[in-house]
Image (cartoon, rainbow, N blue to C red; front, side):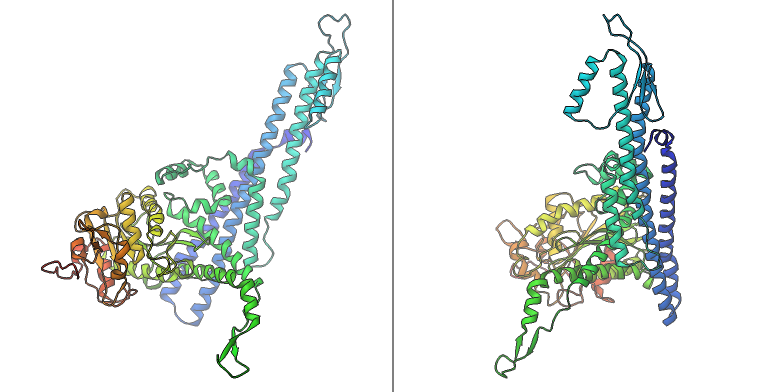
Length: 602
């Protein structure tokens, strides 16, 4: 970049263009939300048949297009701001060098050279003529030493200053040129292909584009206020509110996963960030699965006709050794992401509200935090923790449980708003035998659960305080108990279903008002008694106590389901009673009669 171009550069023009792209992205976001939560909702609730189904599929594609536009516009906006930031820094250096040169009586020429006037050093009789010097960028110890030597022997005292200014100008021009060279290909890459289909390849390119912009814009991104290190949800909320729209857009564009994981940020912000991560992760998983050869048939009849009747094929054995573990992991992630998308698509079904993705990751066993309704404005909140074997691949069942609970609680809430949240925010035990007997899964995950609950207060956008219920199933109840034992459980009610123990021996230790711990144990559910020896609290003489024991002091809620997994079965008293509690009407929940006396053997 030459001197005239850098002098004429106006960062504001690029910043205004960035604002325009950001505004376009906002419009695309609004259009996506309108399709998902209004147009699509109306279509699903009012129109039936094949034509309606086909129209719905087209709307889903259109929604993806707008989502892609929103994401790419965010990247373009950030890239333009990054380019303007880098060149503006070079321009400031140029202007400072030119001003210093003028103040010293030197003249900066159009080609960046510097002319200096005649002068003589102290003690010299003869005045040395003036001249012109051309600077060089960068420099090295050797070249710097040679320049100092030249300055020392030059007869004109202005020569050294002029050379310094010329070098500063050369450095500024090189810095601007480097910025232009660095950013030009990144901006050119931010173009979609010329079809109307947003493919997995397009979303994979978004991930690549994001990495490119983040790399090129390191100086710009490093200049932005960073999230507070180990901040509380209140700290996170204050940080986000203190950012300008430009700074928020940059963090969303370049650091979506981190933004989506911050407790205390608004639900809409976390949802926007996590949906970007979801789209890119889904593209990555689908493309990687497509590279794996189809799984061969595992078994064939024994050609010898002897025992065993079937034998394992060698082709499957080789495939499994090479691809089996990765295929299983990718398939689990694929299933989980499909379940989350199905929940998005179900908005409006039987009155189901919009969904918010408050947490998402495919790392390890995966993370997914999905809300029915906006918790930032809801009058009643329920935060459900699933138990053993829960992971991203199986999260669909947990999401469906909270959808059913939302419908019942909403119907019982007398017009007040409800948000039910599936919180798969911890590494649940994956084996009933090998993992579930140990408490460290609950102990490790409990602080994150407490942070999330506190974050629901920090992100609140209305003045009223919500009524909040912690809901746990199986090992999830152990995590809730650990959260109460380790810290302050920020809820008003606790519902425990199929609990193997909550690490404390009395309901009063669950950090909620007296009479606000509710327990469900279905006929035929063996988990509570099996799990008590490890997860139960202990009384004064060392006996194991779980929430189903009268001595614990929980309200024993009428449960008409059987076994360990049907506490949220549609149309049951088990579900209805939970809905009443979530809606703040726990006094109307049906309770089992209290036994006249406590028998330790139950």
